[in-house]
View 1 (cartoon, rainbow, N blue to C red):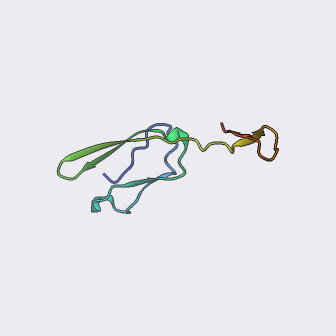
View 2 (view 1 turned 45 degrees about the vertical axis):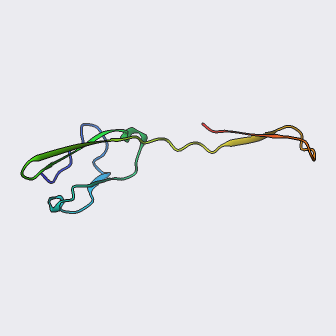
Length: 89
């Protein structure tokens, strides 16, 4: 029907658009811009020409990790061993 159903309160209205201007030309792909963790969920594509075809896609958006914090354990002495520890949230 040439429209996207955004669901209630999803915040997708300004970030979702058809890839092709006219989805009736056999490409009803959508583009989701500026992905956010809250966009994680199940998305459904329902295409109707002569019959109805439905396909669901599960999208998982993960957060970008924080920059790692690294430090050395042990003394910097020639020939000795040290441990490089790194941690990221």
